Image (cartoon, rainbow, N blue to C red; front, side, top):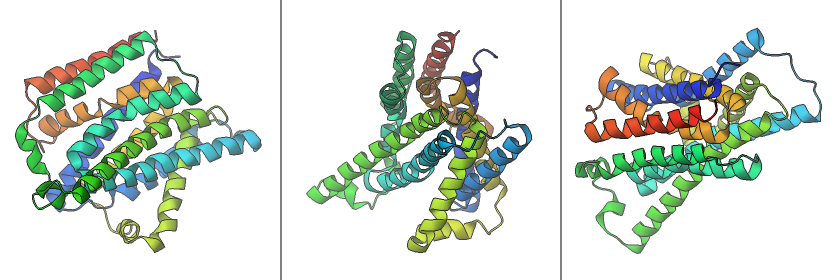
Length: 317
């Protein structure tokens, strides 16, 4: 087996997710609105993973109890990541703001590691612990050196920001809890995918099952949700170039993450996934130029994060 194969695919997944998020921002600035990248990415994931499975995937496992157990867990993983994780994420932004939600979501590797220890029997090695320290030191450095004007990103007319009333504080605390649930959902999806491979060791088929499950959820909920109906309707409009780029990149990231989980631990994939925020910042600043170029503190943080990934990879040689 190729050395570091799982880690390589985990880094590729982080890069794809980072490019996808920057492409979404680029589309919003040039065309306005969120567009149809969400459902489009789900459909493309199903098409790409299903097509690749037909071309190069292994023979279908025997249709027995083990097969259906794997399918059920892959469905749960798709719901956790694509549906619940996203629902909690957007609602937490509405209640607590994008800044606090973004910080709490940095706990995804922590929840993933804890759940992997509880349900998969993984252990937190000295190298994993050191990687955690380096990566979260990088995140802390970014947070502590963020310019004060970042608060201006929050809506000025938000009643939560105008007064510390009991109702406003309650809404913010609810938002924080939902952000934590979002992080738990995403961390749980890592564990569920790895767990499903014990019964159905096929990452491409797993990605296909998860994508189909998420699409069925959206289609089934559309009659009861105006937001979901908007997403469904957007599927029938021609996507812009940046919407297509974002959806394609996110789809490739999802498949790469599935492959990574089949070759390395949940903890490793979760820690490596944290570098997405650094990759996105550099892509936004230097490639697509949608954001200002990061300063020296961010460069140092990026080096710390990559050092954590290198420690994690070298420990598995």
